[in-house]
Amino acid sequence: MEFTGEDIIRYSRNILLPEVGARGQEKIREGKVLVVGAGGIGSPVILYLAAAGVGRLGIIDGDKVELSNLQRQVVHFTGDVGRSKTASAAVKARALNPGVEVVEIDERLSAGNAAGIISGYDFVVEGSDNFETKYLVNDACAAAGKAFCTGGLSRFEGQAMTRVPGAACYRCLFPEEGAGAETCAMAGVLGAVAGITGTILAAEALKYLSGAGELLTNSLLSFDARTMHFRRLEVRRRPGCASCGDESIKPR
Amino acid sequence: MAIQELDVTRDRCPITFVKTRIALDKLLPGDVLRVRVSGDGPARNIPRSAAELGFAVRPVIPAGDDTYIIEIER
Image 1 (cartoon, rainbow over the protein chains, first blue to last red):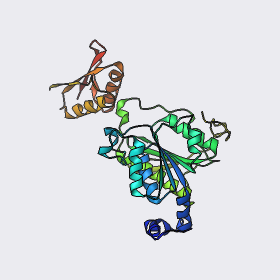
Image 2: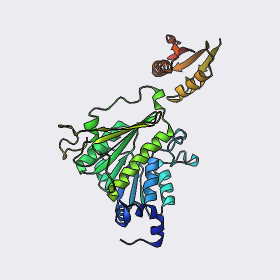
Image 3: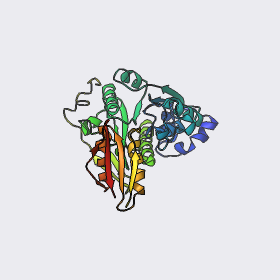
Image 4: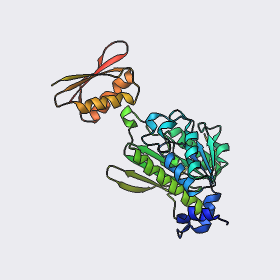
């Protein structure tokens, strides 16, 4: 457990936390986290995990930065429009903390590549904008016995949950794919709502790595920024769940 | 009471509704916004989204070439 003089200062506010300490910071440094989606949710996740000094930070996204992303995807700047999101996010993460190994995966997570990519990480943060990827991460993590957290956005509302092996999974909560945006008006989302949701997920990842606190498992945290009401619903594991009912099931 | 015209036939979702919303927010009570859209997607979506905002929407008028006119009253 060796820290350089710079590390001691850089991570001082983490190390000072009773639940973290030097041992917790060491676990963060050894931790490998994959962030799925460098968008509105992924932006604060990437920044906070880089800032906290995770060992390896994988960023997977197959999209390019668009002008309409900048209102909420705060890791990307105006000059990044047209660049790949992974490259844009990786530049910021490395500039924030050169001690972090940042891995750029400039492709979409798919049934074909998910298991291989996820195998290189201890924890997955899912912040994509589509159900297909959310189910894919859920199923691939269940199959690999890996912990992950996931978040979703709709207008002024955000949701977050964490799943560790043995706990209720995303399919226990949402067995069927929900209705996507039915009208163009439903694409609206307050940028800060993405930030709150991503920041919750970043905290979950850091708690998982360091062992601090209690995770958002077997529950769904949802909030409405119009009223700033937060509520936590209990989620039970569903017998016969297509994903975690049999932990050895293959991702579909 | 005025009729405002808006053509979003060259726009894609969600910019179609972004422009519609900007025009709706400029309407005075009694004004009508006539939105020309291309394709049946926006012809279904825009009336629904405008109604959700509390506007009165008249029956959609087919205008040929897969375009439609949507009249929205404030």
